[in-house]
Amino acid sequence: MLTVMKPGLLTTVQDLGRPGYAHLGVARSGALDVPALTRANALVGNPPSAAGLETTLTGVTLRAETDLTIAVTGAVAPVTVDGHPVAFDAPVAVPAGSVIAVGSARTGVRSYVAVAGGITVDPVLGSRATDTLSGLGPPPLRAGDTLPVGSPSAAPGAVTAAAPAGQASTEVTVRVRLGPRHDWFTEAAHAALLGQPYVLTPKSNRVGARLAGPELTRARPGELPSEGIVLGAIQVPTDGQPVVFLADHPTTGGYPVIAVVEPADLPLLAQARPGTTIRFVPWASDADQAAVPSQAGAGPTASATDATAPSRPGDERNGG
Image (cartoon, rainbow, N blue to C red):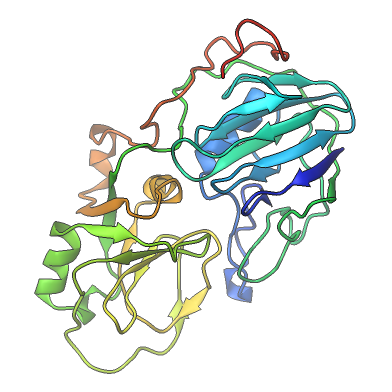
């Protein structure tokens, strides 16, 4: 079990979400940076579907009530156990009674804390994820909360792929497919979306990435009847400023959707800080995917290629 001592700005329980319920008005939710969560789970021997914690900018402080193994990935942040620096992006053994502190993110926005055995709060519609829009799942963490932890299913293992660490760039590029309502916009709007920079605003959250930049002007008056909204949809309200819907998005909306972000690029938006420049480029075809270099691993990171056993506070291999 874990006890929450300091919850940070916003720390929630997240897993891979609850797909398949959009027809009931329930969004997928789940981790905004799925590769980071699944990597953390792999480091501690969990299946990809195990629930962990998603922090936002300022980290989280927890007390281990039993012996645990943890791993922290995603936005790069200092991690300590009882005040001693331990490794980021590697399994770490934590004795019972110890205090785990994930500090403020040095790059990116969201860090992920996995615990061997997973966080085992009661699932809702098959998922333990917090949906900040609908209120489904456990509420955001508060000081004094306790979190149950399951039994480890496997020993911590090596992860050889490059870590998808939180991005450190001041500019990111994401791929989009136009539609389904791009015909509601002028050619000038299409050119602006695919040729001009936008800036991520502080109003962004788990529901959507709100952008500021050239106005996307409409080619026709009026509004649409409400229709289905998918993850990554770029909706354009009447002010002409695009909103990219993220994991906790509404399932319907009446503003037209000019394009949809390629799902593999959504973690870039999840880890982008306010003020980051966002550029959209057309996603030519699925056949070109292998030729497009991924940016999900951009930014400084710690390799876990040798993470075959959990480190302990004071080990020489532990990073600061």
